[in-house]
Length: 65
Image 1 (spheres, rainbow, N blue to C red):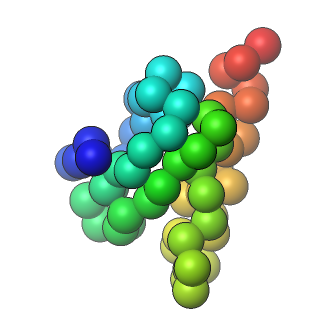
Image 2: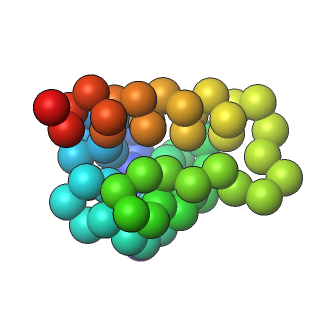
C-alpha cells in the first residue's frame, strides 16, 4: 500500500499504471484499490471519492496514448 501525502493526479496515475493492481491511500481523500490499471470505486463512496476516481481514471486513459 502506497501512501500519498498530497493529491497529485499525474503521479498517482503513473503509480497505478506501473503496478497495475493494489491499494493506495491519499491523505485527506481516503483509501482506494486499483486493478487492471484503473482505480476502482469504493463501496459506499461519497461524492469526493467518486470525483477522485473519475479524475484519476481520466488521467490514466489520457496518459496511455
